[in-house]
Image (cartoon, rainbow, N blue to C red):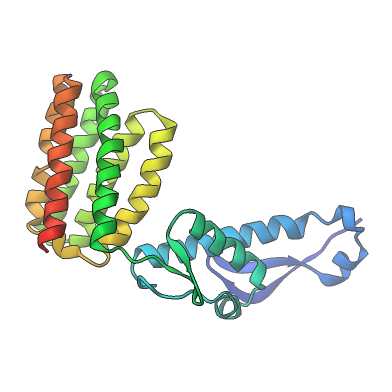
Length: 247
């Protein structure tokens, strides 16, 4: 059986959608129809990535309600992939289902930020202890390189760049730990960290100080003392939390 495709001018987060022509689809038996399922999953993932990016950047503000029908209409797609994307965002904790309101972006209250930092401290302490016990010279080089990136962006007054470089540093730290559970949990936590920073960039204060605060972490790792490294990490995180509280 031959198959033909056509482009339609329907916008999706990553471009136009390629769809199978309706006359071809009509000729398939139900058990042969595989492409639409794959396509729908692909579209749902594109919608998820687009919405996630907009939430984490603050383009969709905290507390904002997400209406599936409105999103689907704006993208020119059905509600099914939008619903899948919204459900995925809810599973990741970026959306909450508020009674009589529907799915909306979570709001990072001071209480939630304190809870977030408490869990972050526990997870990252495990990560830095693991890295201290089995790091390589390349690991140290990468971490110091990221500190330099922070310092360079701080000198240029690039707040957004410093934020991303700091998150890159910490993501590298828990990746180097080599524990998939730490990676998964930390990844979820850092989405919430990004969300918190969209409402309180003032928590960063002096940008150069942000970069310099990471040097003791690398020095502690290099020393080989896992307990000292965990203590240095806790001091760093508590300092960041204090900055949030005072901003």
